[in-house]
Length: 231
Image 1 (cartoon, rainbow, N blue to C red):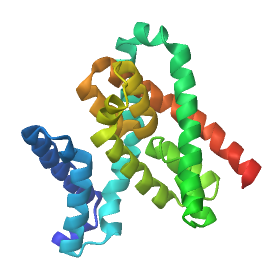
Image 2 (tube, rainbow, N blue to C red; image 1 turned 180 degrees about the vertical axis):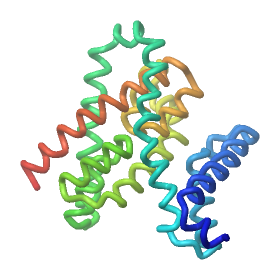
Image 3 (tube, rainbow, N blue to C red; image 1 turned 90 degrees about the horizontal axis):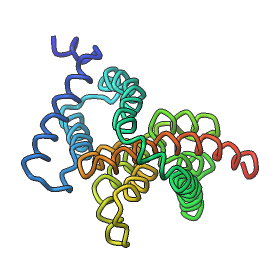
Image 4 (cartoon, one colour; image 1 turned 90 degrees about the vertical axis):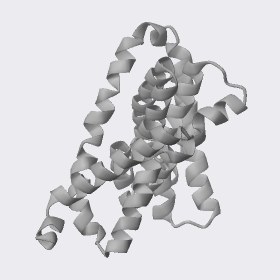
């Protein structure tokens, strides 16, 4: 029976939901940003798969189903965006300029760092879309010859780091307005960072949600353009 369960999508879905629920409770109980539920859930699932001798292919049957739901979850971020639309529209030009600068900086620094460290051509292009949400990043990586699994891993790591220390880092360098902090976190750390911003401030979370969409559009345009020029 256990072997049969492993071969169904129910295993991956059930394991992911259970571990994330426990990680979320741990985060709420501790109140520490170091216990980010996404990061804790990923580490716990990897450990459980290793300890149980369970292959990634068995887990991924359900994981792929959850990956499909990432798209609708990003669309759901439009609700706080709609609720704060007047404040956001009043800042439309600074927001557009900030996201464009952030997207370009992310592409250049990530792919440039991979190049400086001696990464192969596939690795360099896998790093380029690291700051956009996973479905868009994977699509971009496939178009420019990157490695989609590597891109997905880098995107998740980027989001976890941004969620854990993004708002605090922004305040450390002098940013005080929640809209500016949300713009920086949403542009650099996509959905995972936006989930953290929604806990910190509703306006910051709404701007972060907008930054996800804008950064995805701008990065989807810029990365192929850079690829045509230098690829």
